[in-house]
Amino acid sequence: MELLITFFITGVVVFTVYFGINKSRGRQQDTQPSTRTNSRWYVRRVIIALAAVVCVVAMICNLPRKYSAPRAIAKRIQRVGTRSGPTVYRFSNLYSFNLVDGPAPRFPLTEGNDGYYYGTTTYGGQDGDGTIFRISSVGEMALLHSFNGDDGGYPNNLLEGDNGNFYGSTSAGGLHGFGTIFVITPSGDLTTLYAFTGRETDGANGPSELIWGNDGNFYGTTFGPSPIVFRATTSGKFTTIHQFGAGDLFVSLVQGSDGNLYGSTAANDYDETKGTIFKFNQAGVLTNLHVFRHFDGSEPGKLVQGSDGSLYGSTAYGGTFDCGTIFRITSNGTMTTLHMFQGDDGKQPRNLVEGAGGNFYGCTNYGGNGHGTLFRITSAGRVTTLHLFSGKDGTGIAELTGSSDGNLYGVSYNGGTDGYPDLYGTYERKSSTLGGPGGGNGTGYGTVFKLTCTY
Image (tube, rainbow, N blue to C red):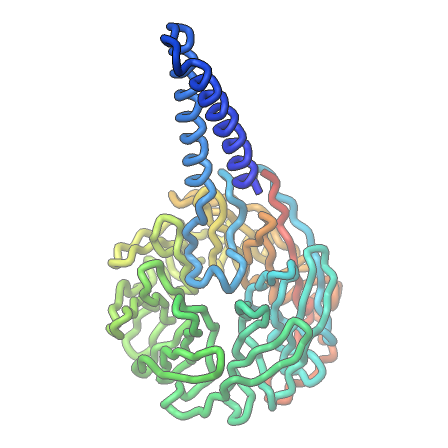
């Protein structure tokens, strides 16, 4: 809208000045121009030149920004604001889960084009195998689907497509019992696109999170013991593009602006490494960029590409105090440890999201008051604690999501008001049809929260 207004005003100025010039020149065609007339002519030329400069600057300032997300047209860009950064933060709990709508949300919310936020819970629902839900920015909750095992179980993250539908995966259940890839409409109609077989050809185990590739396909990994990197189309055509060796356990992938896939592996008992960062190029060649050795971190999580082109991430353990680290790594493998947590500022940091001014935001599972923290870290490694979780407003934090409204939204795996105050009590749970646990840990069944950012 600002760009259109700028063009309109500039056009009016140029037209008025140009019309005035032509009119003036028409009256003076047969007469010798005076010094005053020449001055007016040059003034008008200067005005036209300035108007042109304003127009060009407006175009440059309003060009679409280059985001780290590989498929910006398929989902809202998950960044916090576009200015230099928030000055005031206000935390609010939007929703506490119960056994009906599904406990234990583990994956970040996805902002839909309709302005709602969509997510999953690992357990709960009608059959205890997880749910898909929708929630508004003020906490209005709607349950869209309950998994029953046959159509999958233990769902992972969601991705919005150009058609307004959401795509995702389940790590169990389905036709063969090893997970699925599915599509669900905003109204809750679910269709299975692919059912994992459990054979080595498609990973032997269920999938982890999906990401959009810049070619419009999904990419993902499966869990060990012999995980794979795979590609799947929105119609369900499945292709294994790389097979890894025994002991490599994967977290998730991210596609860089260079078109390469980057990812992390967890600790490997076979060679005693504490995790790795790897690059998988478009020619199918895999390169290990970094091997963690505990002093610089252990158990790396999901990566995110910053606006500076580097990759940022966290490790759950390791560092000087064994409370986890935040790091930056370049595409050629240059590693920099930005922060080592000490416990009072958090323990076991989770995945990051980039915000305004090149800052990053994240949560820790523990530390602070014992229930975790919400923090901001600069690209230079300065950490600021923004919120200390109390348990009733969340604990065991999963991930944050940056929203188009400039705020942060997040989910916690445990905590909330449903299940408190008996911190050590045992609550009735609905067992999963797939044999897993059915819900909370006696300290609440998880929350959705919001961090309002004032600029």
